Length: 129
Image (tube, rainbow, N blue to C red):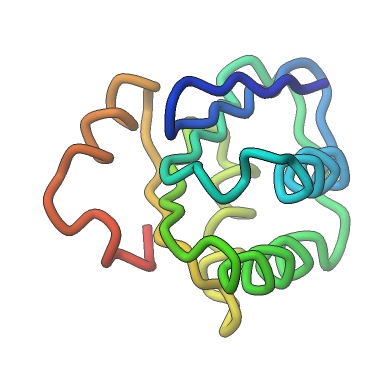
């Protein structure tokens, strides 16, 4: 399950329970189609409440493709992933290693760490985690 919460130029996508990578893709597609997509600069993927994560083959690459296309409309996005789950972290690494991923990504242990990362100078230049 997931929910979106927008505050200014930040969007938090919070996930919980048993989650599939396909549900993450669904959440991303909803965000990309939202009327406020062009206004967002900071995106937090909060996976702290996820009990189990199921990764379907090809989804990290699919997400990289979604974001590569979306980056033509909004190139300003930075992504902070809040998780300590090894499967989620592996999926993020797969996303980042894709040749077509465009957004800078950082894995954080907490939402406050994510906020700190967004405040760093040049955090928008980091592609890898």
